[in-house]
Length: 141
Image (cartoon, rainbow, N blue to C red; front, side, top):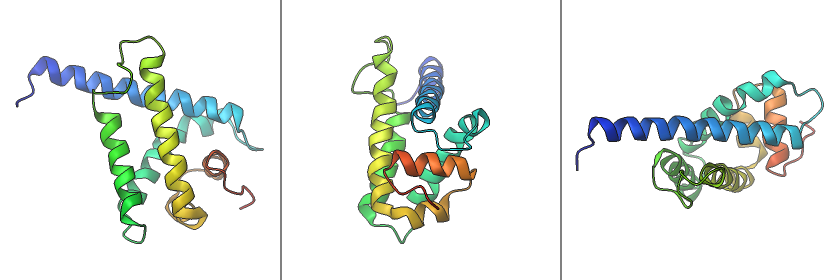
């Protein structure tokens, strides 16, 4: 089944909107779970840093295969125009993407452990502290 120009544009717009709303959810998480020293700049860099973390964890052969599969499924779900709640439903349509992402990341981070997160994290220390706090990991490191 070929993708037409109009469908391709809709898929691209859906992906951009999903990433933007995921970023907004992460900023909200920053406001809730804000560790000492976290700034607005840390929030602005959180989504790209988390996406890099997901990509690096998904490619880590030392992690269990099931964990890597969860990460790839998460990326596929976020890129897919098919959602649990359709995107045309105001607020809830995009909130489900953020919720699914948060739940999947929390599970993966807990399975991967703090060492894997610290090893693969390329962002700021404050951003890492946010991810660790949201995952229920200790935030002392």
